[in-house]
Image (cartoon, rainbow, N blue to C red; front, top):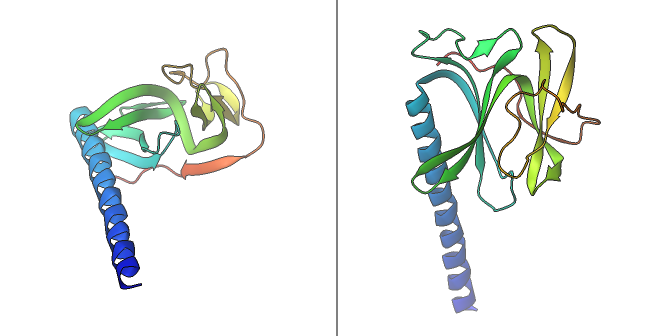
Length: 169
């Protein structure tokens, strides 16, 4: 009984260390991306999009130091959403998606092994706001949710991971 308690404690500490290591890698990749892109106004969410038990990062970006903190990554239709695959040494850019607006949702449906994403689309000539469904094509998500073959999301099955516009940093 004494040994069982000891091994349980060791297992819990090991799992806790793995979680901390994974969080550190996630943080390092996200931090590197934010630094490399000179982001100043953004929101970050982590979610396992492809079922590999490793979080991907979704970064909703509005402004950079290059644009003096103004919304230089936005147009009348919305701002840029980056999807990153995080690696032990940093990150790999999966997709840069223009003209998106919160809420950003990870849908329960999948395409080519990756969760579909839901983004709000409005402005830029679009008269009625709607949620676009972005499907992974085996390599990336579409770079613009308004370009054919655009797909509207039906139902609200999924989880909102970025709910509102980011605050200034």
